[in-house]
Length: 184
Image 1 (tube, rainbow, N blue to C red):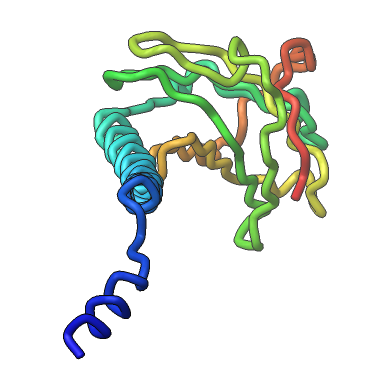
Image 2: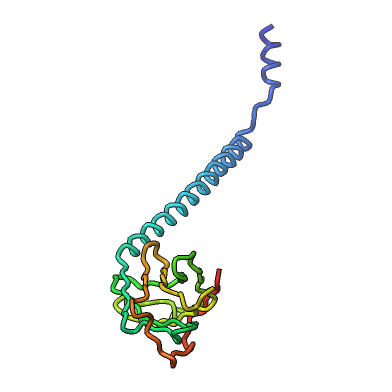
């Protein structure tokens, strides 16, 4: 009886050590691949969060001011070109992304800057720059009373309002150097 048991026991085959080793290696490599993918995704997310935080810190140290002595339009009755000088007093370079024009107290007309020329839209830290904008498209060109120029940094902008005598008019003002923009 004992011999029958031994015979049946010895007839059962176990996994060979070689196959067991291969299965163990495949299992280990699968776990390593999953962990690598997970760690990479976390790293990418953390880098994006760090970049966003750094951009917010940089924006916090940004400051623009307008030089009203250079603010003018090309016509008193039907202005289509607006020009001003903006100075970047902040600690970082900054780029203009859009501007809004108010026709008295109506909804603003929004212009998205499409110009990719950084010489026209980027203002280096510590420098001033003359900008020329298209202000056509108002229902009543004569009633244009303020313009807000926005930057890539949320909350960093310049608001230029018409003074009581009106906009300074310079009929020689040309569209040369005008920033390309699209009305939205």
